[in-house]
Image 1 (cartoon, one colour):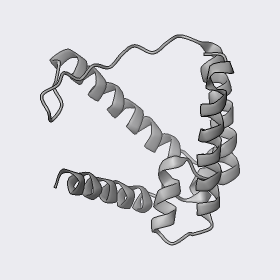
Image 2 (cartoon, helix red, strand yellow; image 1 turned 180 degrees about the vertical axis):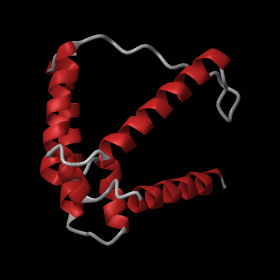
Image 3 (cartoon, rainbow, N blue to C red; image 1 turned 30 degrees about the vertical axis):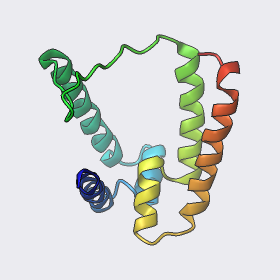
Image 4 (cartoon, one colour; image 1 turned 135 degrees about the horizontal axis):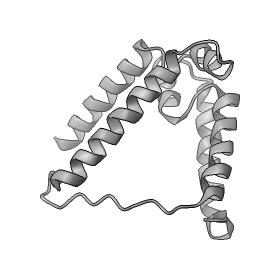
Length: 137
């Protein structure tokens, strides 16, 4: 039963992403060409919402559905990890025309060639797992 709630929320989120054109290759291309504010507005809204939600969880010391305290640890400060990771993520996003969330939305919308991109993302994640201990963290 609990998993069906997660599935319903995921489907709803996917519909919102599709209808807001957050999964549109053309919108993403416009963003990387600095021709449209649309995607920056969407991401900025998500960022502000996330900051407010995390601060609310931390200050109210909220608990999860099982009654366990939600603990959000502070991030390690490291320029290399964010710079290198951000470059790889951004290059992949620019080349594929989609980041991980919209990739699955595009699959659900019937754009099946995106499955090649999902396979590439899974292989990249697997390679990262192999090299994780040798990378600057």
